[in-house]
Image (cartoon, rainbow, N blue to C red; front, side, top):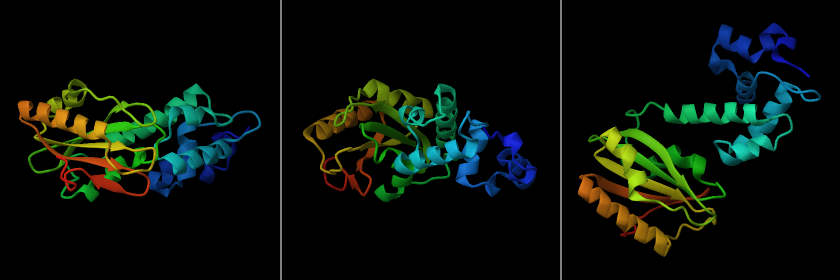
Length: 218
């Protein structure tokens, strides 16, 4: 088992961070720095390579997919998942301004090809800047149950003036379902009571996205 301390000093991911800065590391080395060490029969960079593959396939790696990798137990899976979630939460909110549906896509790309439906709520301030970006629910293959109480709890805490909803379609189809339309109308009604404007509800797949506002469904 190769641990980072067994590598030559200049090659250690954590040593590189200390001497050259975190930007000098490859993605694989960054992962190795997070997990720290390998297991008998698999060195840290081999495990990092497999994790890198999962990330390439799914964006933010699901916990279950990580634990299927040889050498990644619950602790390492939690470390990786937590690192991704922390990075996602601290993408400098207020720096991103939404002017069109396409501006939303980079913020939610991580759910585009998930095998379950995920519902995301993006909070915006009066200047149209993003001040919150959260996964509210995840559901079945083709349905994610959403309740207004869950959706707007954090939006109110954010003191948002408007919101954008996003959910993925694991089927790859961009066509809004009857349930999508009914849910959107319910959320718009709830938002009106709260004095919050629903700017859009976007459906995203791996290859494209659809704006329900542009479709005339809001």
